[in-house]
Length: 275
Image (cartoon, rainbow, N blue to C red; front, top):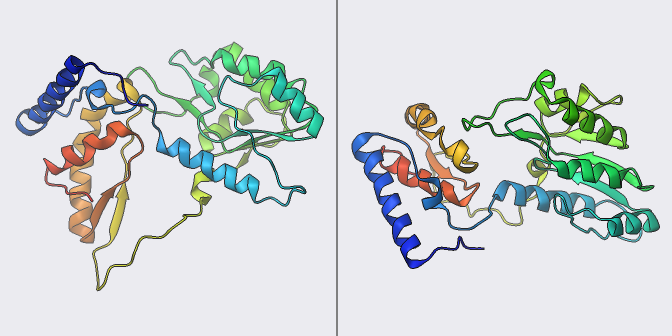
């Protein structure tokens, strides 16, 4: 849904975006007012792609009768869901994205503790399919989480949750390392399920020889992550310039969230055009 703003709020956001452009062009200052560039309250196209890919992959399995897939959001698992799964001998899937989302204090959210209590009562199949361990630090950086730094309570939650699963498969090596530190069985590395997504349509071919098209994305995950933008832009702009010169390529910006609409504007002001 759209970000709720009054008329004054819209004017204030427009003024903030104008100030950002001035800083970029004149002061060579890459900071942004994160809230001013927001359009909708919740958007993450990567998570949407993961959800669609997993739904399609599970739906393609040879279940008889065909699988009926019910999506349950984080923290929304209930007794009714457990009863239905047990009654139908279904399959419970913790699917994709950043289900294991750690706070800056290296703690997991309480929703996982509530999930564990319900999962214990399941008699159906239970799997972890393609999620990752996520943590966005206060400085906006994204770094692998060292098992030795995880809060003891959260480490116990990971151990208990993984013990309830018939299969544990994650999307990246750092997530595998963390879960392997607590899980007695194998932790499989399968990549992000969205990588296996089948496109519904393919782009039209261009006539004649064309420069290579390179997709780029520099994710912005909230205000903390946006705080690291000045540091990142110091290497992003020269990197893209060298790529364009060496490869004679063109760029297409692939949006991950709505705030990333700043990147084509910001890059254009530094001589990097995107499609």
